[in-house]
Length: 146
Image 1 (spheres, helix red, strand yellow):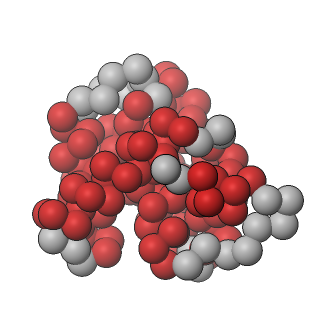
Image 2: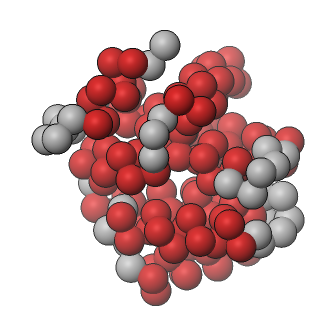
């Protein structure tokens, strides 16, 4: 279903993603973070929907479609590195910290801080160009909104 998209991500020198593909890549990364601990809880799904709705100003039907596509893409995609590279190329630097904050919101949505999710976040944040300090601050902001 997403063969063309995955080819774009796996190209040796990928072109920057257009807005729709960047949305899909971010949504798939949110899904990947939520699924990392082996549980895809309703709280995480709801948080993904809220993040996507707020970030892109889209309604519930568009959010549900985007998340559904992202769930399929995430299950077919080879690795997290390509997602983060695509997002890094498509998202302005000043917005990447907000991406990390959104990822922390999803990771923390089920009320527990899982070591698999922590490990993934330690991997993803630097690949997005966000340092450990800024990632920790993003996590604290996400926790305070809890």
